[in-house]
Amino acid sequence: MAFTLEFQGATGEVTGSLYVVRAGEHTVLLECGLVQGGKTAERRNEEPFPFAVGEIDAVILSHAHIDHSGRVPLLFKRGFAGPVYAQNATRALCAIMLPDSGYLNEKDAEWENKRRRQRGEAFVEPLYTRSEAEASLALFESYAYGESFEAVPGLTVTFHDAGHILGSSIVELRYVEEGRQRVLVLSGDLGYRDAPVMNPPARLKRADAVLMESTYGDRLHRPFDETIEELSELFESARAAQGNILVPSFTVGRTQDILYLFAEHARRWNLSRWHIFLDSPMGIDATRVYGHYRHLYGANLFGPTSNLPDLDNFHMTESTEESMVINGIQSGAIVIAGSGMCSGGRIHHHLKHNIWRPECHLVIVGYQAHGTLGRRIVDGAEEIRLWGETYPVRARVHTIGGLSAHADQQDLVDWYGAFANRPPVYLVHGEERAQTPLARELRDRLAAPVHVPELGQAIAI
Image (cartoon, rainbow, N blue to C red; front, side, top):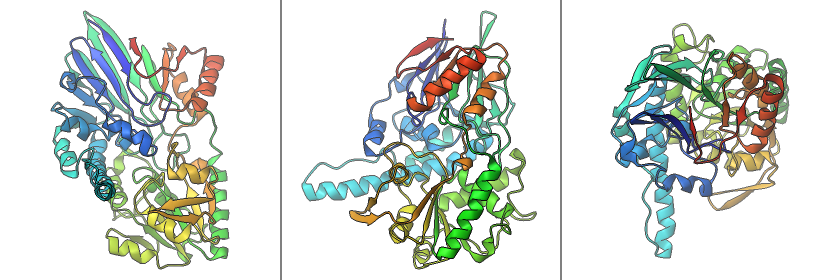
């Protein structure tokens, strides 16, 4: 019998996590994430899985972000009926995020079919629907950090805190066969050392193989106190310009970090002079989940008797009508809205009303994948198109790298360095420009046996 791993996603790119683990006669998926990054990339989600769905016995998720979990409903739609294992808070967040993903699929198909109707072309179906996503949630089984369970015979799984978002996990798999034990560790997405809300990632001491993310393997985040000062200057400048501030934000993780920092530095940043809008139904629901699982992190995000951020002039706009009212505000609004890469959602409406105004500010606080609108703006686009209309980019664009939820190069090297036996490490979830310098650092500083796998590659553990 064998213990092997196949790399079927997130090799040389940052989205679409998908790894196949074969443990004896059983097959398990590690992650089942959507490919993101524009229409061309996302069409790959429609392709058949690179394995027979019927051979998959279980799915194990590191966390709830859609690039790690978003194809679970598609797997279910195509016949998977086995368990999906996740940390307790991850299950709660997937119950929000996966149905929302299904809803967006339906809207995308509806928009595309309007275009096809005009051209007399055949209609498309959604990748999966909201109802299919909701039905797939019945497959989920969840466990606490440190609680071991047997996913399939001989394969024991333990979740450890990865410090990235609520419920994010380092996944430790121990396979025992004929008295021999082998250990595979998936880092998932690792948090960084100065994360405002989450705990530092757990350190493990031994493995036979490690899959490690490499999103920011080519850079060091600026010191956190410099980020705080940068935000102070931004708010002062924006207030003097008498415009609005837009913050496209991932609804799980980054949004809660921002709200915590707003509450922590409200006086320093004179936030009482602003109206702060969380314009994201999913972000609102996710923030409530953070309130329920506040025992999983150390920061005081909420008031002592409330599951809402402790902020003056804070508004949660759940309905479309409430969101539309914000667009009538010309000055003094801070709007936190999805999506984090400006690839859809309510942020598009706020961009439409503000991106062409030089007195306004756009604050980018997370990774922007190739092909997304956010990446084009960060790369200096002079104009953008929304709903067939062109808008000049005149707002000031700020990229706040210090608010990343991902480990930087130093964090990644330090995390791997805790493995005393220096196991082979396979860099995933990163672009080549990030993986090459990270591999060099790991080899030079730790004599690590580093590999950058290719799509479809298989290894024995």
